[in-house]
Amino acid sequence: DMVQQAVRNSRIEGMGTVPATNADRSGAILGEEDPSLMAAIAASYASGNPRLNGQSEEELVAAAVRRSKTEEENRQRARLREEQAAEYEESLRIDREREVQKALRQKEEEEARQQQAAEEEAKRREAEQRKQEAEAAENAKKAKVDTRVHEASEQLLPEPPAEEPDRVQVLVKAPDGRRLTRAFRAQDPLLQVYHYVNVHACEALEGQEFRLVSTMPRVVYEDASATLEASGLKGKCSLLVEVLDD
Image (cartoon, rainbow, N blue to C red; front, side, top):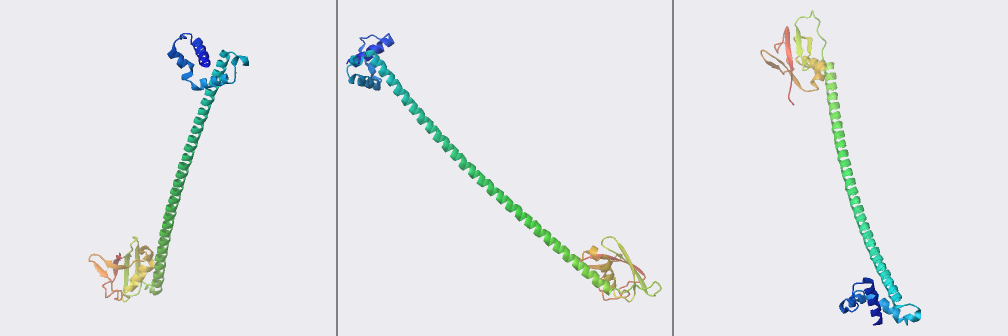
């Protein structure tokens, strides 16, 4: 009772407007709203007679209030530390999540780079293979042309002299636009004209098969074993190289 009365008197004096006889308000002022404060004051009185300790009731109340404030401040600091610790843990969690996302992006980017590099390498190899195949085809074509030219040049008979009778002057229009002129004997097989075209126009023909034709009227000369005379070629005549479809 003495503790409660001391606290009541101290609180009422501090407020200045609360009557000392107001029982309802004094109950709240006594510390019913602050049990820790009442416990602190009770502990002070439990230690002995306040006046024997050389302290008045007002001083004990003030000391108890200070202890209560200190304890409240300690609780607030503890709550602040807990909040800071929680914020720190949340920050760590966010950082870890960011690191995971970053590692995932880096992995995806690395996989994309590897895939792109693999595709580029596949394209390079494919292009290299096409190039090699084209070079091989070109070399095969050149070899074919060279072989045909060599064989034709070995089998081509010498051109007859100008004064030789039954001499046939043949003009052949090559696929590249050139006009090839040479004399043959009337008894030479038509194969000699084919040899002549192969020697001088095989490269333009790129080794393709061909036949000799004339226009107006159109005549196809495919019997290479027939003589020029038997084929109706005499005097001066013009022939056209016609490339055969593959």
